[in-house]
Length: 66
Image (tube, rainbow, N blue to C red; front, side, top):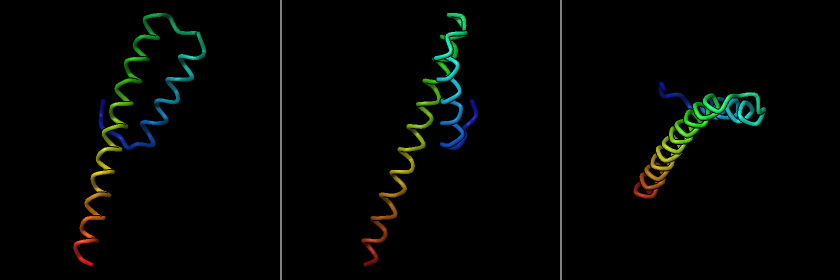
């Protein structure tokens, strides 16, 4: 899965949730969708962690320059 931005990952995750909640998928398809959703969640968590680190660095740099 290519690296995408948070918003596109979230949109993909929302589609997966809709598909899973529809009840129209086979068990195998449901499992594949679930696995894909877990990978997207991991990507989103990584994006959030990177953003938090960047904010921490910005705040530290700001405080160091006061």
